[in-house]
Amino acid sequence: MHISVFLILAFNIFLVSCHNHHNEIPQIISHGVQTLQTTRTVPQRLSSAVKNITKIPDRKLANDIFCQSCELVFNQIIEYRRGGANRDSMITYFQKLCRLFTDWGGVACDGYINIEIDTVLFIIDNKKDLTGFRVCAIAFQQKTCKDPNMKKWTVAIPPPRRHAHHQHNHHKAAPLKLLHLTDFHYDPLYQAGSNAACDLPLCCQQSNGPPSKPSNAAGFWGDYHVCDIPWYTITNFTSYLTQNHANFDLVYYTGDIISHRSWATTKDHNVESIQKIFKLFKDTFNTTPVYPILGNHEPHPTDFYSPGDVSPKISTQWVFDLMAIEWARWLPNDTSATIKTGGYYTVLVKPKFRIVALNSNVCFTSNLWLLYDDDDPYGQLKWLVEVLSEAEKKGEKVHILSHIPPGEVLCLQRWSNQFHKIVNRFAPIIVAQFNGHTHLDELRLFRDANNTKKIINVAYNAGSFTTFVRFNPNYRTYNIDTNDYRVLDYDQYTFNLTKANQDKNKSPEWFKLYSFKDAYGLKNTSYDSLADMLNRMSKNHTLMQQYFRFQGRESAPAMASGCSDNCQAKLRCAITAVEADEAIQCQQIKKKTKKSKH
Image (cartoon, rainbow, N blue to C red; front, side):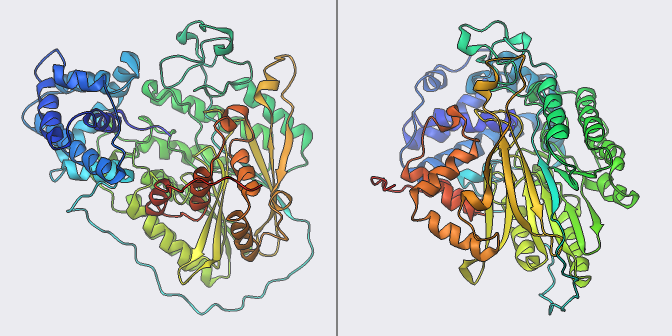
């Protein structure tokens, strides 16, 4: 959920530009940013605009101005470097921009810049056709920025096969028990009682100083402010699991171990946290297999997944090499090659049941290496088609694990589009998908291209263990059919953080928030039932309000703003938005509010 400082700069420059007369914006921004390269002081005109930020009400006009401003800013940055600016000059330049256009303060600004500068300079120096158009079209696709020279790459997908009737021995066996964990975001520096309302992108650490008032003091078990999770909350949870649940058959961990202190990560600290979590999983689950995937926070710098042909100084190859070692606790030896190539793998768990674990973080638009090369990074989607084709021939059913969910608005449009096509093609054998990243309890439903009322695939997002931001921690258990490996039902568990923090000497009181079938009135979890649920959601405000409450596990801060008719329309739209373009359209919904009928 981190966005590179260099991308944040452009977004805030847009907000500045809205204060000025529209047709003057390109010149003002261009001149102001260029002047910053050579002066210690911020131009008065630019500075006054920062203090009087307003937004343009017309969304299309606002996006157009944003994209024009973004393109000019990044062209200036590229030209400055290629005109001879050295590393120190570029650092100083970015420091000025960060302090002017963000509210992160000097510590976070300097931290982000020092961590990311070498990657940024490598891309500028070596991507000869890099332009402001390309930067903005990739980094800010949600603003509908376009690059007229963008390559529309594709992945070859074979035509549908005539599905052979593979013989399955249908038997009444107890369902498989699946535990789904995601987004721990372990913070080694968390300190109860510290300032939870600091002026940095992550708080609740000793360095944040004392709180200004009691309500801003970091809670013992966690906090609803911009804070992550202490180690003892995690170990208390794993102890609870072993004491209160019968053995699981398998465990999915869908990414993000590292905290949101992204301006101060180091490779060594990330390695330490990753190893600590996976050792805990091994100790907790013993012989139960764990199937982990990478999150966008695992590498250093955060979000960056480099190609394989760059210098060790800026390469993130170490992440893949580390995972090949750590995951060997649970995975067969033949997964090592693809893990080292790009952090993805496949495992035949049982006869006719396959897991495909993706590194979808490569599509996240905060991954600046997309500016260098966005064409199916690591050949992963090409590999996915090959794996699914082979699975189809053998009559296997497949679970796909992926950190970035389908329809994530910040997943590169082209990657998102090609993944959607792959799922549509192989929907009959992909019986479920499992995601994390957004920290939201949510669904994604794939619709038939020829009949939008027909559901053909489903992705489940389990939420997060971290409280970041305003959420109650959670975990999820599924019952999996042993005949076709579809989800039969799931239970969502959580605890009330406010209540837990009232007594640090008492363990949090976990409880079942809901069961999927019961909560949504489902006869079963077939695609027809999910289509019926979606239809009922369009008419039943109470059902949508429940979906909204469940997203943050009914935490008081998450529910405080409520969910208007417009909010409900966006949430409902997002359920079937399985491409970035569709998600962007959902965000732009403006529904006339009517009095809700409950």
